[in-house]
Length: 401
Image 1 (tube, rainbow, N blue to C red):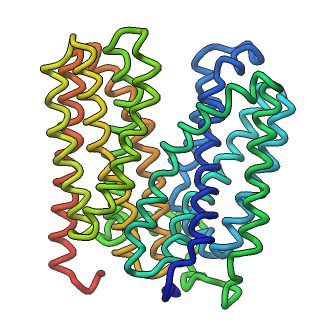
Image 2 (image 1 turned 90 degrees about the vertical axis):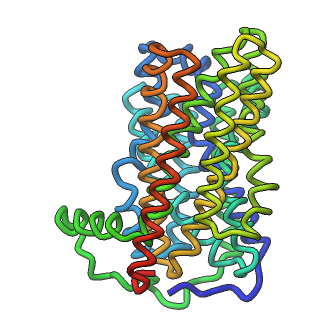
């Protein structure tokens, strides 16, 4: 069961969050340096892009299974082991092996990424007080966008100094340092096994039944089913909004968009959670996102005004991720419940990031900037509607909470 912290251990919270930055860098270190990888591997663009996406494919297929295994192994052990293995794999990647072997290393790295992003929010929730937990979970939700921004700043000088090997070794050293620090600071579990569900069979039928159990429960599925619309929206508009401005403005806009979301999440997002429930905050975030998409129609063609509209849209999306992680922590009070809910959230988050961009690309080809607005409106309304339905289900079956 969850051991609620009487006070927030800010050292552990900060270290776990920094580990999250490193987990996001497992994507960013490739995405930001793709040109350098293009010089190393003589493969097509699709194959090159697979160097990025194959990490997320692990979470897409094995998210819930990861939640099972982590509760069996132990949250602390899984988290620290994931960091150590991530460091080893990044160091091996620095050797720049042949493309097929690099893909194998990246898929294995995807397994470590899954361990970190499932165990991370559980540890953040465990070591924060009830009062601080919404803000702490919002901080955790910022790790992906902030990591990409930091890599965009740090990768170019590292690449100039030592090429891809130095960049990959720097990531390896970062992950190993955090692994050692967290092994030192994270308290050992009270019992050898942290999960009360040791009897869940690791068979295909057992895993499918657990998937069904998780996704049927309006408690364990709430954060995941509300989050998928955000990830589909976020990564898609982040990718394609810059194409609607002059080429000279695109790099600046691409760098500014995640910052707008992070600033909202860590300021107004935390403030909102002081006054409304996490689920209601997610719904408010989706409503604001839908409204913020409308100005794109009126300012397209005027780059200065359009850029401001894009920043407002991304700022509006910033209300959703922190509130979604706060929803996960609020509704699921045990470690294993949070592990299963976080596994589902990781799985559905990868569904969104995988499906969103190609769908929006097709819509843009047919409808241009109007397609972006329609896309955002539909996904935002789905986010509001899903949480409304699940809230009513929980109200009818209070014993499920």
